[in-house]
Length: 135
Ligand SMILES: [Fe+2]
Image 1 (tube, rainbow, N blue to C red):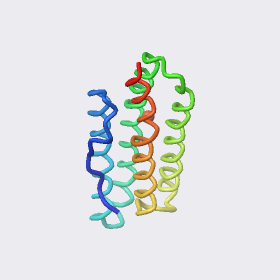
Image 2: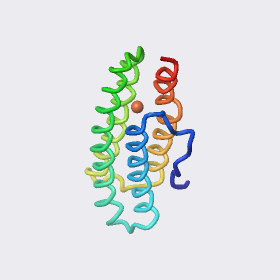
Image 3: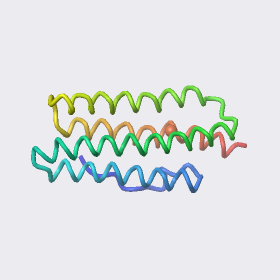
């Protein structure tokens, strides 16, 4: 398991959204470092903070991205919005389990978030990027 380095294929050909995606990946990378270096207490307290930060940034980013798709007249906006909602559901489950003291930040969480981010940016976000290219 490793950090996520930005690659050209991540680009959705919108400067602001690319900038936001880079920032989001940086938040993920920070969470990854916390997990690799943290002791149990850090994995608990910093883990909850990391998930909060991930969600907070996600909210801002999704709002911007959804506006962009709306302006584009993107036909699959509703389906895409559902995927964004799934992201919160996933994070909230982890967050709740952490708050309940059942888990701390761990490799399963990191891996799940990483897979979500990569498949979302590389597959789902590319769909509106292609839609914009064709316009
Ligand atoms: Fe998205």
